[in-house]
Length: 159
Image (cartoon, helix red, strand yellow):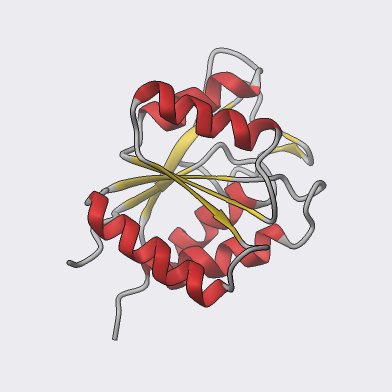
């Protein structure tokens, strides 16, 4: 079953969020998502290069999290270890909305295993719009590179 993801959305935070967007841009996929008013992120304002991101009415992170889950077909949460903070909230919101969500814990499987598992899951769900979430860079300095590779490899056409 071929992958059908056409768009990747996220909240624009450093770390996993931007890695998902950058992987999508690299693959020529559409991007989007909701960000807090003022384009707030831990490193200041989210760069204007992510022009497809829309601001919420509030500067509170949970609002953008809920809107990104609501407006996507599925949510992929990437971490190295247990979910905490906003990543855990994302999973809880996905369950509230009844939306498919998968947690990829890169401390418990290899990147190659995670790519296969994510590809299979996305194909089974037939999702067109994928929300990507996970820790910010300050809480996991390696998460950006790992998530970008995971998403790029999982969404790349199979040879």
